[in-house]
Length: 431
Ligand code: ARG
Image (cartoon, rainbow, N blue to C red):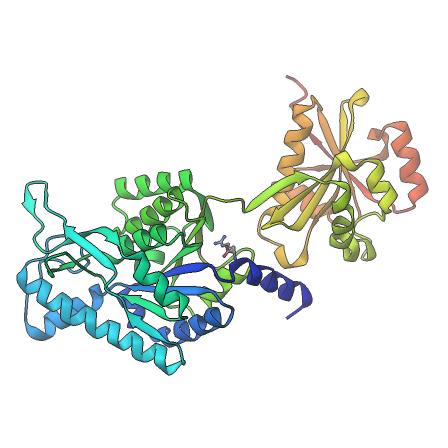
């Protein structure tokens, strides 16, 4: 591991300290081999003072128990009808699993408590059919949960709810996670799913704004996507609408998926976010040092022309950085020469740890747009070692020094770098 990875990890530690994470584990994940690793990762989170609430599903366990008992259940995931017999199996299977989870938590020295914090009402009659013992969350007993958290105890919440009469209802766990996260102003919901999260036809995008997540939910619904995925994506988007800054969908069967998602810039799964995550912005005086640090190695490797602090300062308004969670990971400069309707794209660099993820292309497109907005017709770049990149990814073609304006050509010759010259027309010449 290098220092920049370590910095990346450590950057998130203070950000998440004392914050509440609702971790929603599907029954299938709790039954998977990886669950013991997840428990260890929860211990890591606790050691960093993250306050964890564990919500679990139990569909897998309910179907298994029903098969064992030879009972036909009316629904397993708390989204359909729960008849009498199904409720009985659901209570047995869910509470057994809660107990199993508590055993696992004790084994990694974490204190946990079963919390009956979900006050539920019957889902009622939907589409003309009484949903019987399927419930919906009426209220979350946040006071009880807060007391446990304050004592350093992990509340474990099964997919069941209770009403004031002491009746139990089967409630879908994604919905519980959403309600709990909202009630406790959680910093995150993390859904750890199995096939439903990753089993779709195409991989999910790495991050989605709320609008994008809602769009995708609609599309998946129209195209008959997996109901588990739709439910999680919808709950993720809704949680962001009600104030949870970030919700994540991860494959709970992959070791380290959880820690990588939380402590790296790009994560390992899909994130729905409502706060600032990635941005391209102009640099200020205070950022000059960061830009110089970013490109230092590349300058030493003769990829990027050497420039001093004064060089950057003298044209500071030309420089842009791409940040992830406020860490600069890439930069570009655009020097505009309006008189010649030309602009030079320079200082394009993506830090090693973030290579091959499309950031370079993103910045090139950004610079081009910027140039277009300024009415520029051609962009050029001088490059010693990124010629192929600029041709293949940027659509630049090689030109000779004659295209450089006089003053720029003079500087080119003095530099002795012998860079290749690459050009891109922003508008077809004929138009
Ligand atoms: N580690 C950060 C967080 O937990 C960023 C995660 C980004 N994840 C992603 N799938 N894009 O908030």
